[in-house]
Image (cartoon, rainbow, N blue to C red; front, side, top):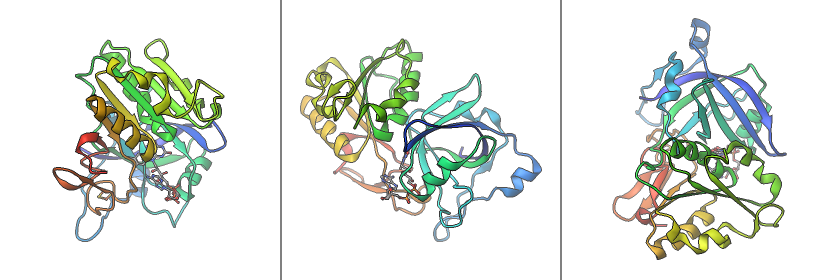
Length: 285
Ligand SMILES: Cc1cc2nc3c(=O)[nH]c(=O)nc-3n(C[C@H](O)[C@H](O)[C@H](O)COP(=O)(O)OP(=O)(O)OC[C@H]3O[C@@H](n4cnc5c(N)ncnc54)[C@H](O)[C@@H]3O)c2cc1C
Ligand code: FES
C-alpha cells in the first residue's frame, strides 16, 4: 500500500556545498494538514489511489532500495514530485533519512527547507534490493547512489552478515556521507578520483574489484556509466549484479511511462514500478 504522508523536518544538514541530509519524522494527519494535501492526479485518465496516511508506523514498511516521491514546497513551477532514495530508517526514533544533492530547482528548494517545515511525501515506491539470500555481499555506491546503500548495509547486518561497502566520490568532501555507515557492522572501503581519501581511481579500479569472486552478489547504485562498467565486470565473472537505476521520473507510480528502460526479455519496463532495482543481466543497455 502506498501512503501519502506529511513528514516534519527534524534536521536539514549540509554535508558539502551541494549535498545535504534530511531527517524527517512522519506526522499524524490532523484536519488542517489533511486539507493541504492533494491526491495525485496522473497523466491521461489514470488516477492513482493512495491512502492519505496518519499511520506513524509506516516507516516499518520501507525496504532498502525503495524510494519516495517528495512534493516540492514553496514552488509553483516544480509541481512534479521528485524521486529520492530511502537512505536510512530509524525505527526507534521514527526517522526517515534522505541524502540529497542539489542539482536543479526542486532539490534547491529542498535544500532551503527549515526545521519544523512539513513535506508531503508519497511512499514506499519501487521494488527494493533482494539481499536476503546473499552471504557475501558487496555494496557499491557512487555519488548520490551511496544513499540506498546505508539502509541496505544496515538491513544486511541485521541478518548477522557483515557486508563489504565500497563508496566512490570525486574527492574526500564528496564522501562526507560515509559517517552514516556503522563501521562495526560493515567493512567500509573508499576511493576517490583525486586520491584524497581511500584508493585513488574509479570504483572499477579498486583492489576489491580485482577479486570479485570473494563475493556472491553485488548491489550497485551510482551514475549510469559506473553501473554499466560494474555490470560488465560482474557478468564476465558470473557474479550476480543488482543495479538501482535513477532514470528521470514524473509520476513515480507507473502511469506516465517516462521512466522506461529496455530489458532483454520483457521489452520496456517502468523503472518506478518494476525497478528501480534490476538484475543487470536483464537490462538491454
Ligand atoms: C529512483 C530514484 C532515486 C533517486 N534517489 C536520489 C537520492 O537519494 N538523492 C538525490 O540527490 N537524488 C536522487 N535521485 C535523483 C533526483 O530525483 C534528481 O536529482 C531530482 O529529481 C532533480 O530534481 P531538480 O528539480 O533538482 O532538478 P531538475 O531541475 O529537474 O534537473 C536539473 C538537472 O538534473 C538532471 N536530473 C534530473 N533528474 C535526474 C535523475 N533522475 N538522474 C540524473 N539526473 C537528473 C536534469 O537532467 C538536469 O540536468 C533519484 C532518482 C531516482 C529516479
Ligand atoms: S515515472 Fe511515470 S511511469 Fe515511471
